[in-house]
Image 1 (cartoon, rainbow, N blue to C red):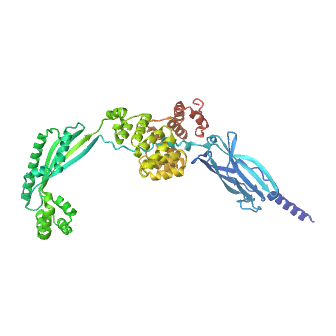
Image 2 (cartoon, rainbow, N blue to C red):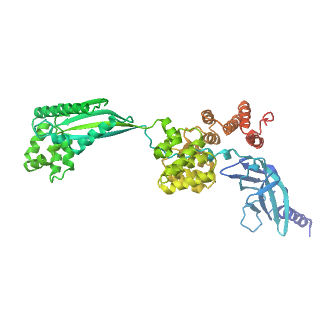
Image 3 (tube, one colour):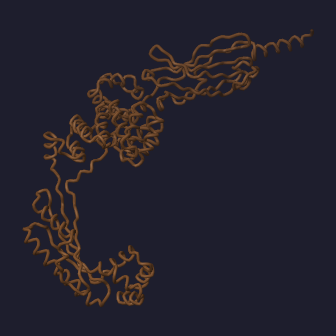
Length: 561
């Protein structure tokens, strides 16, 4: 073997050693980039993407590497799905990294979130196989900690849907009676004063005058003439009918000793074409469509009458069936029924709740500020009116506010069984599902509650908890709540978040904590300290949370915590 051959063989051996024979060198931290870093919680999970940029002449040709991402925290570690890649000489299906040029490998990472993960390290473990040999390379730390701000979304703060009462302090009732006249006459016949509807109207007026809970607001007389004949004649007839009816009514009110009746008004219509058209349309006259077409074709009253009279066979039917009904005076009484005052309702509930209607009970509950008092009223309503879904729904609402979610769920479900089409129990069942992180069921129930006013807040919280803060912002609209502000912070609309937090009418510990996070993200040390101090004052458990929270890692909290 000559010298050139020896040199060539030696060179070949070097290549084999470099490309295949030697062990893989240790991976360096700067080979890896993690997005995001630190990691962030999205919908109860911690997702990330690790991008490995392998330098040239690093990855030996016969090596296969399995990378296992571990999240290490509080003396424990959780593994994500292992991911493999290989050299160009390996027969396999994993992505290939070229020895000469290096390459880029993407490693997906996913963990189920645990609160202790806030202070953690993302480490990559490497198991190498080269032919028959297997060995482990040192782990590499590639990221620090988990930002868990999205987990502050709280379904328990969403206000459940209230099934509204229909209580009205004042209910207006209308009563009326007609006095009919003979053709071309305005005198009131005795028989018209003793009809059933006339006697009933007089009775209602007397009863209202003697009942302190009822008040006669107005009595009106409207008099009419049928449209046949001259306009001048019909005007005199209608006016006379109005005067005679008003005179009768005035005399009757005095006789019945009714002195308080608001206002007595009167008016007349000389030719009641509108009433004529309605009666014809509702009649059984065979050629009524012809009459209606005449009415639409001619607007002049005299021309209308002339054309209708030309329909001689039809006019006879009109004279018999329709026109007599238009010769009348209608007396209408407007009576207000005055309901119980707030004090009377509260007193009645205390002494005799059975005396109250379901709507009075539901309204009475709203008069109390204390949730326990509301619960007592709704519980009574459910006992007295077991077939009204509103009592059970609203009872569940107070239980939800008290944190008794199991009891709330039972009553929401019972309300739903009573009234399957009612939207309030559907939305509230969705809230319970959201509390239990059953997102599929929550979405289904919220869909069935479309149109419910409180649904926007619930849907905004749903989107927050399922990792879509942009959709949450849209759903919340201009709501002034902790959850709405949180969505705005996660979408980096810090100006809007500041306005939302300032608009919360009853700020709690979490309001101040979220405001402190906003201060940290806008590098406002005073906002961080002042609000975190107030948050911890209201809820001491937030001190330990803040100590681990990476949102505050660049701030000195020693004076607060």
